[in-house]
Amino acid sequence: MQSNHDLVFMKHFSMVIGFLVAVAISLILLANYLYGLAPKDADPARLDKTQARIAPVGAVYAGSTGQAAMAAAAEAAKAAAASQVAYGGTLDGSVIFGQLCTGCHTSGASGAPKLEKAAWSARLAQGEATLIKHAIDGYTGPDGNHMPAKGGNPALSDAQVEATVKWMVGQIK
Image (cartoon, rainbow, N blue to C red):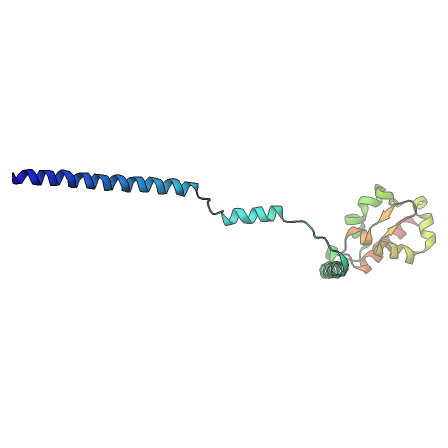
C-alpha cells in the first residue's frame, strides 16, 4: 500500500508542476502581448530629421522687440557679407560684369539697360557718381525697372561696384 501513496503523490506533484508551467507560459505570452501594445521609443536620428523638416523657415518680428531683432539680423548679415570677398577681390570691372551683371544687362531683364548708347543716354546725363550710388544702394526707376543693391551680391565691395560701373560706362562711350 505504501507504493500507492507514492504514486498518488507523484500524480498530484506532476499536476502542480504542470499547472505552474502553464501559468508561467500564460504570463510570458501575456507580457509579450502587452509589450507589443506599448508605444515604441522614436529613433533619435529619425526624430531629428523630422524636426529639421518641419522647422519654420523664418520668424515673425513685431513691435520694438521685433525691430531690435530685425536690426540685429541685418547687422549680422552685413557683417557676414563684409567678411566675404566676391570674385577674389578683383577690381577688374570686366570680370565682375561677366560673372554677375551680364545676366541682366545683356538680356535687358527687369528693365536693365543693355550696353547700348541709346539705353544709357539719360542715365549718363545724371553723372557717373549717381550711377555708382544707384549700383551700390539699389534703385527702382519711375517706370518700375529695378537695380538691386550691388547687383544682388552683397559680398561685392563698394570699390568693386564702382570699378564695374566705370568699366560699363567706358564700354558705352
